[in-house]
Image (cartoon, helix red, strand yellow):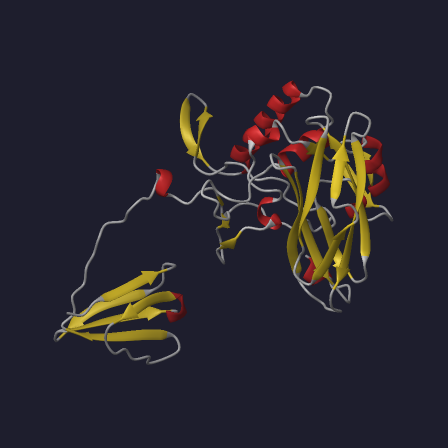
Length: 330
């Protein structure tokens, strides 16, 4: 008996024929095939793979759908927009990921399944509306911080969230920002990264009329008190300040957990934050230093504050550079 196991990763031009007891499988783009062949095969050209089998036995089974607890979820859909931001690479985009594939939605007088940003956005808007009801005095930046710093980067089993597309890979901040939105955790974030609305004008000079036109100012965007850090042109050591506000229990201590991006030395000035009734706001500094002089690509890390019950995670994206190459940045 000859066992043939072939997995077609993508649909390719193929032909299957049987002549004089021999099965011939001829497929274009053989690099797209994964499998094991318990017999000899011959490669006749670099464009076609021809496999010859004697007395073959083939098994055809119907397609299977895996759903429920057996399915690996959540995953970043292949059509989901990715970062980095071309206009403002000093700000990690996207901010957050939310359910947006095969969502049962209302359309006119019926219900249909739809996919896209228009499906994910209502999930985020709904979560923000609930948070606004809980904390009516919070700023938009505080609400954004709550959903970003409490988002999940693993599924319910503790496995990392995957990103679909080419290639399939473990998702990173350019796929999901802070991670997959977690409403229950966002309702009790512990710490928030707040921003005074006037601070935005220090970084983005915007003219708002019928449309919005923004020009970056001399201050780099990564100095804005965002719940993320992105340095797209790290050539020398950079020190970045962040300020956190305690919105949880009054007397609490948070410890820092550092995951340095590859090729970068990352230091936090204060590894312990101690909050009490008189000390609700604390500023700390993060120092990022390139380990080599290198024209590199983006690498990712994180800074997490934890107190045993809550975790407040900030995604970090760093790119070491020597020269300004717009094509590389974009």
